[in-house]
Length: 602
Image (cartoon, rainbow, N blue to C red; front, side):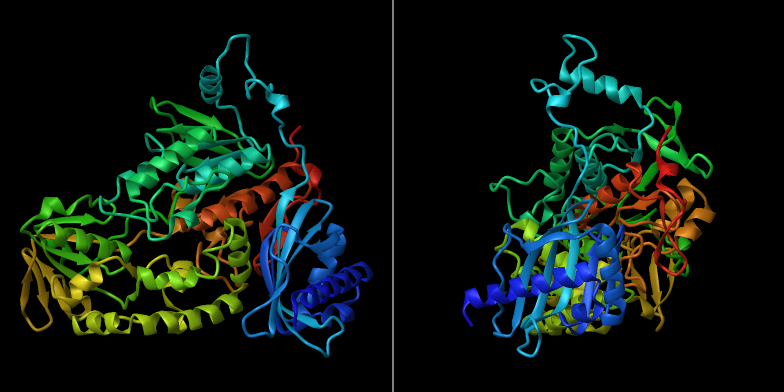
């Protein structure tokens, strides 16, 4: 089948979709779908991120929301590749652009040819997401075309204006807690949409949370995939950034994007006023003074979790040597000639063990649960399909494919490929005493990033050292208890150690919510992270069960992809387009107020 025929079929499918939406014809809509079929929406047709499986679940919701949103102007997206058949000659994909009364949107459709269908194509996956919201953006001319800011008086410089605005600390619509990649990305998107915001961070400077991590840390994802919103890396940067290069970039990003941030400022408490629908946020300022703000919304962008987690291992308190958590570890140079036990075999555990080995320590890794190991070169198989396409297109594809059944099917096949490529490496690790698995349901390391942010390692050299015997691996299940000079194994043998590094992760976000707010709100919000029953990541940049509380967390890539979606939802509430949205007990989204008018400040 030639390209023009595929395009004709795609245009026919779009035309029939437009008719089904206009006529609210569920039967005609069903003719456009495969069995099984999936739909993921990212704020385009719902003020949420959600997914539906099967015609009975998709048709009523899709058609009703499309009618309410006044979907119009459905057409092939001119900014995306033309419709095409994939390598098997049967599967087809197309990109669609459309508008609603709220903004410009797009869709990615993956399906298959079907001569028996009225359009010749049936869709297996439809993903819809908002691209641009219709609102009055602050234009350059509004901020004085020459200067790009509003001087308080003639002669006030940009730097003086920035200092004045930061010192004022007026009540913003949004208070963002944390100014790492997440907080900075969210603030940049809120700024773009004209939503007043203030970011507070306990550190002294941008990127500080990365600077204080172990010296050998480097990003394990390629450069282009780590771009933050609106401002991308120069091509001269290396493929994989060290943690200090990344920290420098965050610091530069904050300055270049004019992020309104107060460093050395800590949120110590936040109480939600149900009547006024605002938070009373207590800030501890850099000079030790206290200030109270009343933002409408609070976003927690504090990273992957709470405080360092150190398990209560039998007899650990009796150990007389040095015990540090991975978050406190800096360099293996401090441990030259020492016998060191690294507890944990996720990424941090491997990185730290390798750094210790390279600095002359005698290293043993204590394994508590199986690890999913994938060589970093092998891991790139997952990104080959998007490595040569523009980043925005790659993001659209990946967001679409995060529909739960679709990503699980992909990960199963992907893991088969990577395990085959890494077969010899895995066998070597097993012979060295390490338990290596393919993850839950053999979904591999990527699934662990979505559900645990732990339990995997992208090999950048540590695995070879383990295989060669340079780093020993022992099973913690074989340990009976710790003693003053090491640990007693179940067989009575004593393994002597001078120091222990706990690469044992962090407490959950619930502990963060409880410490900043209270236990009741933490319990109301529930589990943060991991796939929920609805297929979406729990509480990731979507309405939570607590009014006006949002959470941004995960990897760098997630920050870029989800920050805009979160900003759209908050903008809609601030502008009075929708009432306050909350997560209901059944997982769906409802409104906390009867009218949007309740949201608008007097």
